[in-house]
Length: 251
Image (cartoon, rainbow, N blue to C red):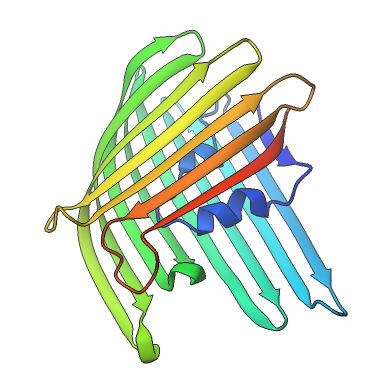
C-alpha cells in the first residue's frame, strides 16, 4: 500500500490555495494510487490572543479505493480564518470522482461542491463527465489530456446583500503531466480550461505546476497556482496567483 501524507507545514498551504480557486485540482489532492486503498487526514489549528486576535482551523480528508479497473476518490477540506473578530474564510470543498480505466485511458464522472468567501461565492455545485487519454509515457514521465462536459450551479453575494444565480454548462479541457528534470528534481503540472457553452467569451483557466526537490528523506516542493476568469459575475479581480511550499513524506 502506498499513501502520501503532507506534514511539517500548515495544511492551509495546501487548502487555502485551493479555496481561493473555483477550479479544483483533484490531481493534487490525491494522486492516482497503485494499491487497493489510500487514506489521508490532516487537522491543524492556530489561535492567538492579546494584541492580535487570530484563529485558524484547517482540515482535509482524502480517500481512494481501487475496485477492479476503477478508482473511486473522495476529497474534503475545510478552512476557517478570523482576525480581530472578522471572519476572513469559512470555506469548504468536497468532490467524489470515479475513473474507469481502459488500459492507460479512463472515463470519469464526478460531483463537487464548495464555497469561497474571498470570491463572494456562496456555493458552487458541479456534476460532469469526461474521458482522459494517455498521450505519452516513458518510465515515470507522462502526459495526459482530457475532454469533458459539466453542469454548474453557482450562487454569489452581490452588492447590497443581493444574490446572483448562475446556471451554466461548460466544456472542460485539461492536461496533466509529470516530467523528471533530473533524477532528484520533478515537475508535475495540471492545467484546466473551462468554457461556457452559451458564451464562449466566459472562460476559466487554472494552472498549477509543482516542482519537487528530492534531495533528502523528506522531498520538498514549490507550488504555483494561477486562476483566471475572463468574466467575473461579481466585483472581484479576474485573476489570482499564489506561491507556496511544502514537505511530503511517503509511506
